[in-house]
Image 1 (cartoon, rainbow, N blue to C red):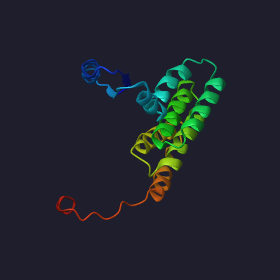
Image 2: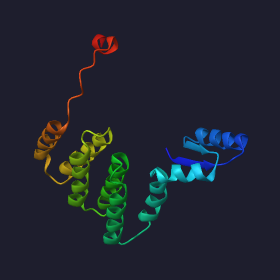
Image 3: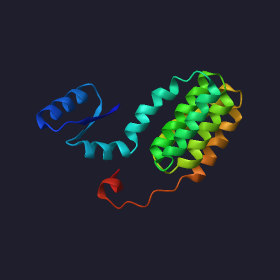
Image 4: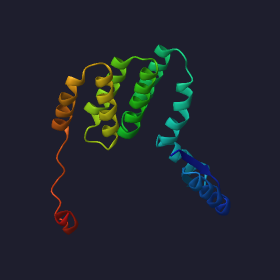
Length: 165
């Protein structure tokens, strides 16, 4: 789902554009002023959405890798965006049949963000695939064991909904 920033001071127009975005399975953020739009843009999501396709058009792998690393440095305070960047970087390496570097990217997501959100699951699946594709399936249990030990157990929930299930 793409995130679309709509800056429009006419409420009816902004709402109509937002509805179109929703029908097209995009998330729309509506801002009624340029100032609010700049605030939203500064939160990072949209900047990354603009940078990602630009980085992907760079043909030279070493140059694209430098750009991914620079983007990672820009967004490292946002674990969701930083993980997304590493996953895109891994996809670049896989596209060029460099499973070792792709694996390092997946491992970085796993090591840094095991407790930060669900994106670690995709990194684990991709890392497992990379290990299996490089004839190192024997390391898959080690991968999951290391990840499991990094994950913090959720605090106890005493909700009746949790205790009944």
